[in-house]
Image 1 (tube, rainbow, N blue to C red):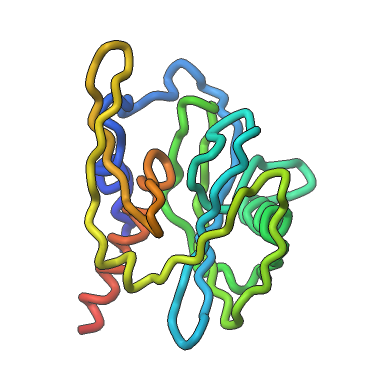
Image 2: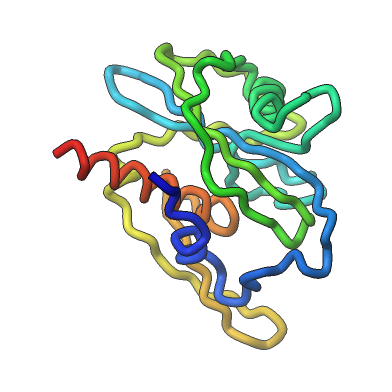
Length: 196
């Protein structure tokens, strides 16, 4: 089935976000992120991380493991695997990649992000990269699927901007991560309904 795509992603976009923002930047950098599902205590979790405060872009924000495509990666899938290993210390095997979601452009860093989804049947042992990652957040999948989007307001250029977010483990998850999560949630909800 086709992915829910941008329509679902943009339900979680900040009010001031342009719909087709990469017109000015026809050559964005490519990168990828990994939604890593894993089993723990007979339940399914996925991983988010709180980025370190000293990073150039999106410092202190909640994100998925991931980063910039490098020539040595050969594929964007390999980028997601490598970056996840560098940031969390856990190496997921290529055959554990389940699929991918709709790419998303991030204007502030001029990135085209390709999200991949993987499943580990084992509980990973994390060894986080302290220079890039403040904390790793294990999210119970069923609890997340029950969560509803919330809204906060931020003043930007003297305007009150509404920004949707998910509240996960008392952390505000918004922007590109929330947009990708919303499509992920829509895909899983569709699968659940189809199987019942």
